[in-house]
Amino acid sequence: MDPYINEWLNLVIRFAHLITGIAWIGASFYFVWLDNHLEKPPQWKTDKGIAGDLWAIHGGGFYEVAKYKLAPEKMPTTLHWFKWEAYTTWITGFLLLSLMFYVGAESYLIDKRVADLTQFQAIALGLGAIVVGVGSYEILVRTPLKNHGLLLGIILLIVGTALSYALTQIFSARGAYMHMGAIIGTIMAGNVFFGIMPSQRALVKAVEEGTAPDAKFGLNAKLRSTHNTYTTLPVLFIMISNHYPITFYHSLNWLVLMVIVLITAAIRQYFVLRHFGKQQPLIFVAAIIATIILAYAIAPKNVELTAAQKQQRVTAAQIQTIIEQRCSTCHSDHNTDDIFTSAQAGVIFSDMASIEQWAPRIKARVIDAQDMPFMNKTHMTADERNTLAIWLKQNDSKE
Image (tube, rainbow, N blue to C red; front, side, top):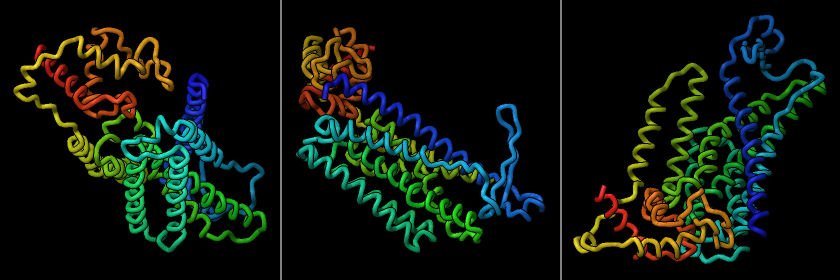
């Protein structure tokens, strides 16, 4: 595919994914907040079957919201459904995954240092992982385990950890993370399609037929919605994780991901409890402490120069040669890379002054995370990274 067309498709689909995701997550967060803030209604509302209500003010007006225990006696003329936010978020997400990691498998998904896959094999494994992940969840959530939230959560965490490990053994680190995001995102959309919508249709049908709605439908929809609440922050992190290789380029990247999943789920739990008026600051504090511990645990080791290296002088010409050969294909005024035709992240190495300007980024991405050059496409050697590290140390000592 023409790189220019690919870039525009990436932009349009990513922007659409962002917009629809905001709509879905916004609606989801609002209804969780709404459900958790309902108060006991006056008797006349209770007699009508209303389980809870609340008053709110927004945009210069007052709102009165009521939730029925099961359903109203008569179906209203207009009933608003919330489903397309979820479906369009999943559709645009899958299109983006396909464009970047399937059409562009050789650039983003296949890392021959991890596994020497063909494009077909990589796509098949990626789709297979999504099917296995979503299928495992759907089987488990339809068993009596759904009535034992903690046990179900532990089992799902074990399954997720196994998938996370397996994906990092066959794909690029970035590709593995994104496929875990695709699995979680598909589970969330599946909760709407397989659980929430059928339950809601059953409730509507019962009201239309004048029969008593079965409470199990409402409980099933609530369970699926609750699961989506706790997976929202993990999937949001994965969406932006490609900007933070300090997480996915660690040797235990699969474990790092699962720790972050737990931290973000705990943060969501704090806010859910807060909706109920239950202040549990220790949960939030624990999440912050866990994040600090994680950051310390995965921090790259400082390069320690030997006595001989301290005596070695790296010249500007050596550095310029390395940068020109290994980095400038993607970071110059006129890129020569076949995929990245414009300077990535706005980083341009045109002379020694610009190299010195971006020295902190070189340290972070080339020396510490070692995710640059991207997928080591230009075959930067360990000796070249070492030479850059010595130069950076020399620059630090001058300051």
